Length: 137
Image (cartoon, rainbow, N blue to C red):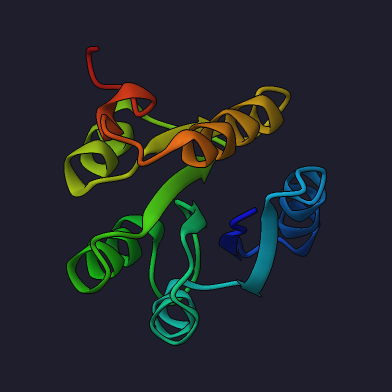
């Protein structure tokens, strides 16, 4: 079984733990790193080469959209899921244009959304990044 290597990026320790707890319920997932800001996320992505980054939109030092832009320009094969407690349509649209595979709101639906992305990755490459990111299907 091929493991999906995951980097979790959120400025809230509690949220990082919650995301990791959800992903650890899937045997195919391996959490390879965690951080609290976008600048460190880019550095860790370069070093760790994760298959998936779960990335908060609002963070100190470098926000999620700027981080997504840099990660996708340097590591275009990396899947990125954007998460936010207040996911605005314009943020979701920007994330979709930049290549995020999903944009998920923090809350009750976050777990199911993350599990759906991981299940999709286990089946093969995610061919339609706009499918879960607010763009019209």
